[in-house]
Amino acid sequence: MKTFSRSQIIGAEFPNEQTVRLKGLQVDHIYSMEINMDVRISDGEILAIEGLMKRYTNFVCPQALPVLQSAVGMSLREAGWDRRIMKEIGRQGCEHFAEIIIECGRSLDQACLSKDLWRALEADPSLDQAEFMEQWIGLQPANEPK
Image (tube, rainbow, N blue to C red; front, side, top):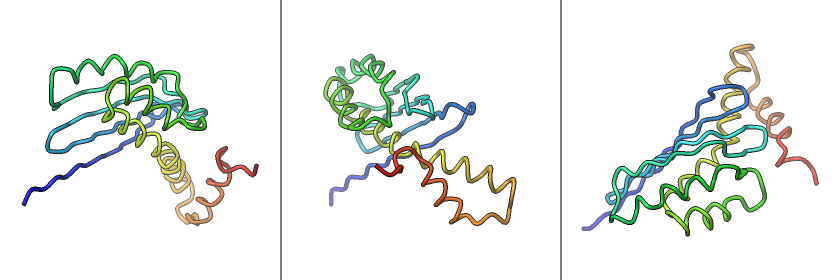
C-alpha cells in the first residue's frame, strides 16, 4: 500500500514585547521546507522573512526564495491576507512556502494568547484560565463588535 504523510509544525518565540518570531516547518516524503519570520504583534506586519528548502523536487524550486521578500510589509491581520499570500508568494514563488506562511499567520493570536496567559499565571497561579481567555479574546481587534 502506498502512503503519504505531511506534517506542519509552527513555533513562536518573543524576542521583545513588540515582535513574535514564527517558525514554520512543512515536511513530507518529497519536500522539507522552513519559514522563519518576524511579525509585529500590534498590526501583524511581516518585518522579516527567511525560507529554507531542505528537500525539493527540481532545480527551479530555489528560484522561489527571493519571492519571499515580497511578503515583508504584508499584514497578517488585514482582510484577505491569506489569499494575498497565496497569490503573491504561492503562485509567483512556491505554494509550499505560502502554505507555511498562512499557517504561521493563523497561529499568531494563539501564540500571543499563550504568552499572555503564561505571564498572567506567573503573576497569579490561582488565575481562572477560562475567564482570562474569554477576556483576552474579547479585547482582540478582530473580535470587536462591528
